[in-house]
Amino acid sequence: MARRLGAVRVAIVTESFLPQVNGVTNSVLRVAEHLQAQRHEAILAVPSDHDVPASYAGFEVVTLPSMSFPLYQDVKVGLTPSFLVERLLADWAPDVVHVASPLVIGHEALRAAAHLTLPTVAIYQTDVPSYTNRYGLGFLESFAWLKVRDIHNLATLTLAPSTYARDQLIEHGIPRVGVWGRGVDTVRFDPAKRDAALRSRWAPGGEVVVGYMGRLAPEKQVSDLTVLAGLPGVRLVIVGDGPSHKALSAQLPDACFLGALGGEELARTLASLDVFVHPGELETFGQAIQEALASGVPVVAPARGGPIDLVQPGVTGYLYSPGDLAELRRHVATLVADEAARHAFGQAARAFTAERTWPHLCAQLVGYYEQAMRPWADGEIQADER
Image (cartoon, rainbow, N blue to C red; front, top):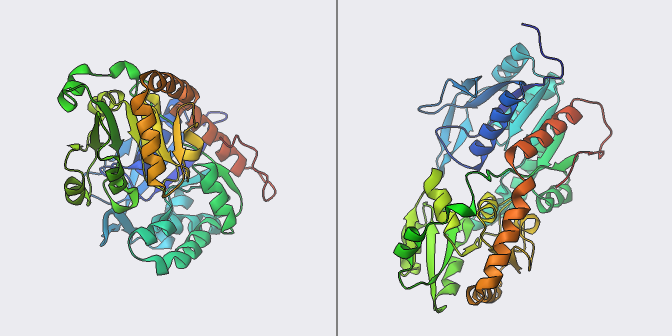
């Protein structure tokens, strides 16, 4: 069949895919859907796992042998030799290789693509070097940055999810870095889904509902929310699960723990909050923050990483100095005490997300693909950076 004029042929290689649901998987799914809707061509190379679909969005899914990382079961370690990845790419002959959050499988893909002189776009997503400190392995941070540099130096173009992450990568010697954020589903996440019945269950006394949504793990710093204890007229709601669940339940005995939610249940829950707090300081983007903003909820978050691009201080929420939990408490208390401000901030938050939908962000990504496919000088990153 003749190829459509202007169609881009994309090989997507990812470290994570269904049935694992996380930020990397979500981004890959939305990109595949966009490519199909715009009649581009794609193949997905993913880690082997139980129940991996044979296709997605009409594109073939190829599994690569892998095993779970012993210390983090959600992370897959590739077992596929580089020459097999190279054969896959050579046989399929893409115009560009999209490598999602490259670590092991992605590193092999970047090596193979470089050998085949195929242009590559590497999507940086996780601040692995900083995670080493949160897990008591700070002595490995320098080595981790060397690894990140080795991986991303192979890419034609690296895309960071925020201006903070971009600057961090450049500071560590990684060249050709642009910014590509993440989209948000403004149909699914909508203030109109605010649910009075949910609120009455959480806060039967009419308390102001302050919520968090995300993984319950050390790097998310959810225990920082203990600083909100004793705020009058507040009910804390925690959405998510993870290895810190038991410890957090003991530290926050008055909080309402809802577990991991998805679909419409999650959308109703976010829209039913009054204030959203995300204390993690290692967010390269902060998709949960963006979903809260789309739901019309003001956000309080640290002034580090992705939140800097997402939260407009005094307009859609507040940013506090990393580590200053007294400032975190003050900002939450300010919003708790001022219903009119919460309403105004929520309206501004919803408006802010209007141009941050997945179709908009994926169209920007295709522009980056096309840029990587053209010869260009180091540093000349011309696509929109926000």
